Length: 591
Image (cartoon, one colour):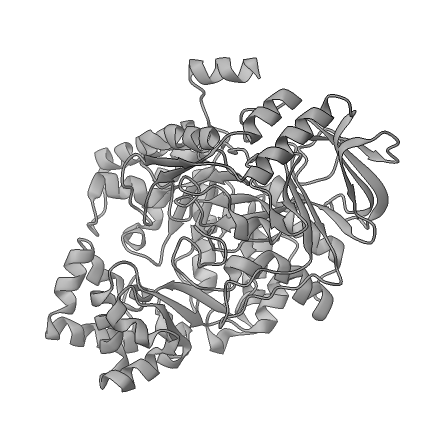
């Protein structure tokens, strides 16, 4: 099971950690790449009000038997059971007593009329590059998320630097708990560059060794994002062979699968094959049926495939976000072969009229090894530019590619190719691909959990670190309850809570998390069901939700009456293969 990091098991350590100043830290990454060790940036002082509150809490703790007591709430244990009326007492970061609590806490929270839940877990997070630069993760916490699992595109540093990356998060402080996968593509690029060719036996062994290093440094498993080059160049056999290195150290295989449209069932089957043959559990990232002719059909077919695999003993499950539009780079509309050699090679090809003509034909007819996301969106009308990464093209934002093409006087494909070529970074778009009934159907599968596919924002109220303005960044977790419990009655409230707490904690082998039980880490989300609403929309994607009153991470109040306190009590959540250095082991024993 993943090892808990430095355990703040004394009030003195908790107070010391909370008093640390906010340190900003430079780090950038893209899927399948790393940019080297992050560089530290100047420290920023904690808000005075936070410092004062911390000092007051430290003084009170000396006389109070508990650090925090939550009183009179309707308490969900997270296991899917109905709520009970209870007080919850917390000390040294953990739940100490649940029931009638007579003695006082240094901090008393009156949860009368509100629901007390284990903290919510985001199973597909994109915050890995942001947290070293800003560890507050305010958009996550203000929608009730206390734990995030990142790494679809891998870690933001190479495998050999992961231990230092995690150590930096711990020393600077983060407000949420965070763990990360490592990407097979990172190992592939380190050995093969951005070539589309297959590795030979010696190169496969080097890739396995890199993955092994990542696992020993604390990665939770191995990921792929198989619609994006160069990840898309990896064969099933390559993934199995490299995956064996992660499997040996208890890792999970998590995949943005090769096709989420009409080839969805085959792509799910491939992910299951990789996990089954490599010997590790399988997680399907952001499960969706992104193909209009297959709406109402494909999702049930996926359930049959997953249920059959589980029946024969394969540990496979999926996570999902709850919106009908996906979001990713506009370059996804370009067949994969054009990326061979990297971004500069792509731009050179896009400048060649003959190659453009071929690409446009293949958007109509298909191309081997490429998922046709234009087809999945129902054509260019279903693709909306949201971040042009170029001031000259910003005037086209929030318009469909069909509309942009008319304004440019070009074919939609040419407009897309030009926008990608002219972008000063990854040009982002929304793709309207999914049907609401399929989302509701998938939510009812017992093995689905909730993942946003969104990152923490560098600054509260702005788009996430991916540069993708999508409402899932600010509303996904809350929407599960506000829309699918309250409005649509798709899930019961206990089941919705289970999908965001005990199930993902069990799935990720997070020891002592995901349920409100004595001895567990005290991650808590307290909400008012009547006022709980996701306010973020496609037009206004950075609006905070309402109804999240308090959030505690490892027993420390991080959201207080809906506002971030500045506290950073989050922990790094290490994978099961972590091998501590002698220094790390000595520090753990001292704590």
